[in-house]
Length: 324
Image (cartoon, rainbow, N blue to C red; front, side, top):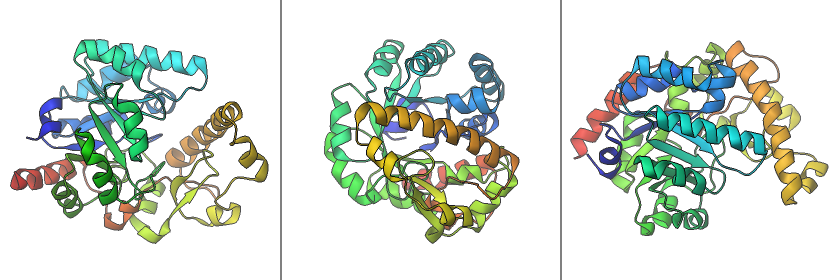
């Protein structure tokens, strides 16, 4: 055991990162049941897989009694969304969830809600300055999102990010660039307490993403991963396709101007995210079209086949046991 696994009560320091639209109950439960921890992505659970939030939690609990976590996006945006997220956190706490990963803002309200219940909060960070800002709020650790991650990747390599954050004294989880046992061993030896993976877990039988998406991950190489602003308004790691090449990677001049101002930036991100939610749900679950965006990280370099999610976690568990 290490600080991370001991605090969460899990066997293997592997997080199945929250993914829209790929975090289905079966995937979450499989990772937890085999010793890691699956993370609930509320928007996926409710709007992709059509579970009322409480019923979705019940579905996961039928599949595993082991710890699961929840992703909470805390960016100040639309009040109705924030209120709904707070309600979901309350339900999760009532149903026994004690691990929360926050992102995109101030996690204070989440910490205030979960700490009285013995909850643990880790926060997504890409740089030292963001980690410092939330340290005083009482976070328990950091998900260190590096420049090889899928989704909204960071700017720094895993080693630099670790070196920049290790002085803060909290457990650090490597997010990005890990898909093989060798990757896992390397970052643990670097000093990280564990890893968060997304792309590797998409290419599993338990993930309900469309076969086209899984095939795209298997066929992609590291050089095929590019950053585009066209999906959410901020750089997003996706697999390069003819459509991506055709439309380019940057937003237009009007959007660039509006992104400079706080109020218009929040509304513009909301509109981008609303559009991306619809398009990614369709393409990632219903198959390839000419206008697909497939989120993935540079860990595609080590993904050569669809592998059972439990087998992945158990394999990493053997590595972890041998390192202790």
